[in-house]
Length: 271
Image 1 (cartoon, rainbow, N blue to C red):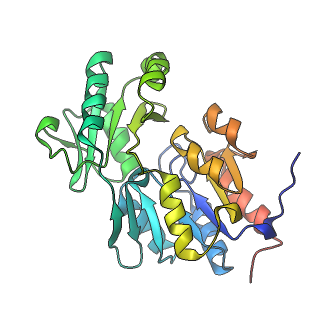
Image 2 (cartoon, rainbow, N blue to C red):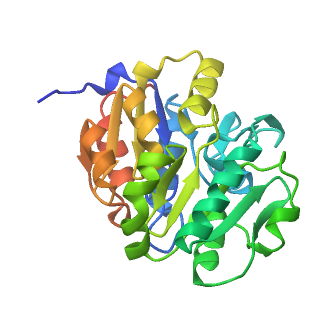
C-alpha cells in the first residue's frame, strides 16, 4: 500500500456536490473551516464544480479566496477576485442534437445550461433537485429556440432505475455523456472538463498536478482524480471513481472531506 506524505503536496482540488455538500446539497460548515485553514497555511484550494459560477463566487468569498476557479463542469473558468470570466467554452451544436436524441429515445428529461440560466421544458422533482445543486432555479423554456452556440452543457435526467438501465448504451455510443449524479447524466464539452480547468488554475499558481490532492465523488470527476498526485474518493462516491482513486475517506454527510484534510495536512501544513 502506498503511503503518501502531505509535505509532497502544495494544492488541493475539490469537487462540490457530494464532496463538500451533504444530502441536502448544502456545503458543510466544517468543510468551509477546513478550506480557510488550508488557505491560512499557504495551501491553495481550487474549486471544481458542475454548479454555476455564482456558487463558486459565494464559496470563494466566504473562504477569502481570490483566484481562478472552475464552474459548469469545466466550461467556465472565472476569477473569484473580480468575478470576471477568464475563459468559457460552449458545446458544439452536434452535442446538443445527440443529447436531445437520447432524451427522446429513452424518455428522459433534459435541461440546457447557458450563460443566461438553466432551462428545461417542464418543472418537476428532478429540475427542483437540479436547481438546488446548481444554486439557481431552473427556468421553463423552448430548448430548441435557445442559441446553439451559447450552451455550456446539457443534463439528461430520470429515475435512478431508468438511468441504470440506459447507462450501458450511452457509455458505449455517447462517451461525451457521463453520469454525474444518481438521477442525472451530463454532457462533457470537448476540452471543457474539470481536469482542463484544474490545469489552467495550477499553471496560474505555478504548481504541478503531481503536487495536488484531489477529492471527489462523481463519474464526471474521473479525469482530474486520475490526473492529480493523490486522488481521493469519499465513501459515497460512485464505484468507478473509487476504482481510480488512490484512497477512500469517510462520506460527505459525516464531514469525510474536512476530516481528511485536517488530519492529512495537520502536521506538515506550511505556516
